[in-house]
Image 1 (spheres, rainbow, N blue to C red):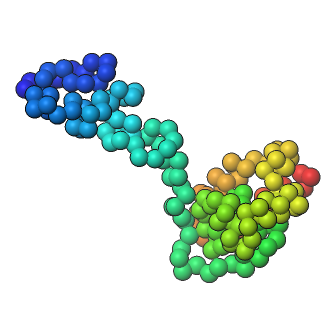
Image 2: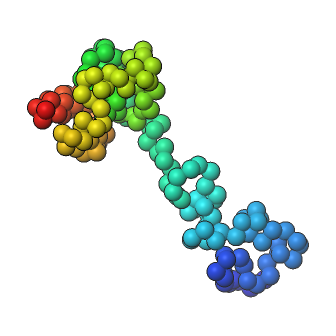
Image 3: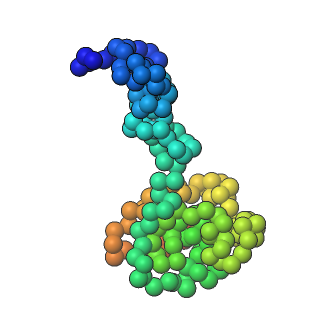
Length: 172
């Protein structure tokens, strides 16, 4: 076998590798996949098949399970009592009940406030906190989330959110 092999457009080896001689699939990893989906390195973009949905090489849940909170931090009642501010923090800014940051599904936020997802969405509508209202008021939600996510240790996310909530309320 020669030291350098060229790949054709389909990504299969040209040069009669050992796997082809032994009747095995001709894919680079022996799986029969030829890597022809773009970069020749499989669907995952790093030489491995991609096991989740979404675009190649990207994990759509990359922040969902990462958390920037300390497990020993106290649970703040201000973030667990059902108020427009606490729901704004949890639903829109992803602030956890321990003043951390973690992307949460609507069902997780609803469970935090001991309600169903439908009740949570009704609460958002009743209190002018729906995503449509935020857009109408031109609230910079991506920027606000970024500010909350990158808040350095020792800076209260709740206090940052309080300023953001006041600005949101004043835009009505």
